[in-house]
Image (cartoon, rainbow, N blue to C red):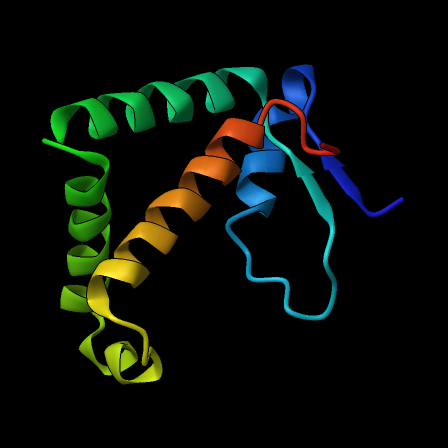
Length: 102
């Protein structure tokens, strides 16, 4: 119970359900293997395209706050520190996508 799992013909419906904001519950999400593989490949390409992990983190930070500048006032930590936190957090999520119970 509380697990969204993809399998076979239902992959499209599972992915579609994940597009809905579910703010009343927290469920474990298991993405289809092909979606995980593609996300990991894109992430790897992004990280390799940056001159450093710090630069990749800065790009994430800049993209987030360029699209929603009002959020920036919610973060009191130095920009470089937050950029690395975003980078490390996303890296952890994407790396663990193949084993969500880890």
